[in-house]
Length: 205
Image (cartoon, rainbow, N blue to C red; front, side, top):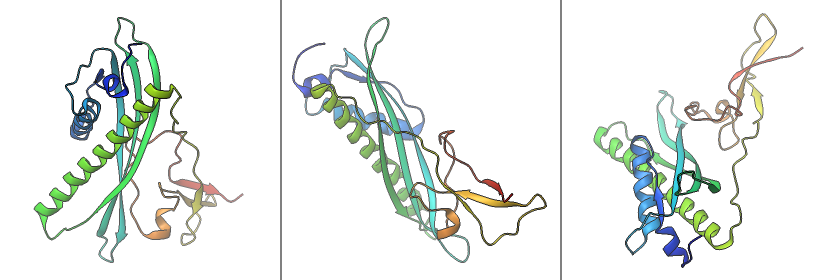
């Protein structure tokens, strides 16, 4: 591996393309964090990042509108060498939780709130990934990685069982609470791990 200080090593990291608008903003923030105050020279390493954001509608009103949206972002990153046969050096995970208030009566303000939330989440994820990569350059200690563990499932006590004696069940959200307990819509399942349970039924027998 090339020598040099930690900032010099970070400047040698090339950030691969990340799809969609959120990914573009995440890549720009990563490039800024890696380069720092000096000119970047991405010639020795390649950073590949996959990330997604889950939005939850909370603070549900009587007219079924939501007063706030909670955004939970997850990212997995991997650092490779630049070579004809790239070598995986290290990998890790980063998470963050953020949110924004809903203003349905002000359409353009709402769009601005959503765009600002996306940039804020991307900036935070980029900062945490950059910090983890810098720590690896310094210590070569493997960063912590997210382990998708099964979540508990709760039975809806307000619904009668069906003809097969099955009770409707609901898994918890990112905060450990089921949606039926606090009156919110289900989080967007896109990008969620297969290990995370989905809504279904539980047989009482």
